[in-house]
Length: 283
Image (cartoon, rainbow, N blue to C red; front, side, top):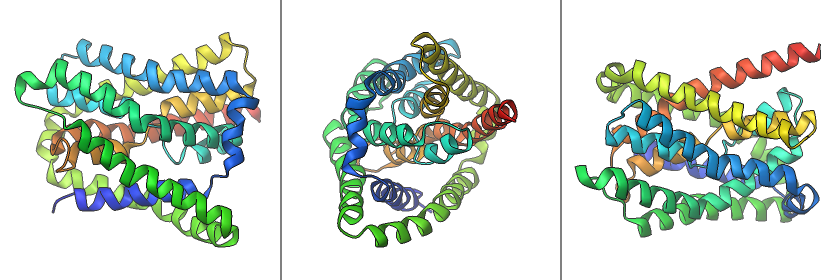
């Protein structure tokens, strides 16, 4: 089974569901709370890829996995981060704004970062990136579904709420199905590298979330904003990374998606642990 025919519909549905939850005024928070928004976007767009590059070098990852780590690091925040922010007692409105902004900004930063990374690391071993195809796929599978979702929410809010209620319950099982298929198809490669890659992606999550929390403290943000930024920087859109890696129009390399698969699993473990810890502090 070619997993691309699973991941592309999942990514499209996730982005459409994100649009269903967005209103144009959500973007106004960039003006109302610029410090929190800019700090979180700095963490996601600049800090995360730098940490990923450092870890990839430290662990001496082979090029395909090195690029896979960079890819997951430069993707936007995960669509379920809003739920995690709510469970952690964070600022849900800020989480929605950050997810929306990062999803739009990374349409253009992902091609830039991956083009430079591929040229630096991948071309020597025959890995190339058709930047134009990546831009087209991002616009078609990410921007367009978000805009359609925003339109449905704008003109038919009741229908948007009803559709979101269904999609929000099916998104996680669909992602788990994708991960299961990947494990079945690539279990030998995964088991051969699970300790090395697993340690690397876990450190990526812990270091990025920890750095985001530290920056939030240094800039004297409130508790709710700090929790939300920690989650947003620590939770990336694994479906997009898998789609870019495995797409026949871009990298066409399913092994490059393995770091994103492991990241998705460890991301939920780490952030659920974080939610439990902050909730126990509250109680």
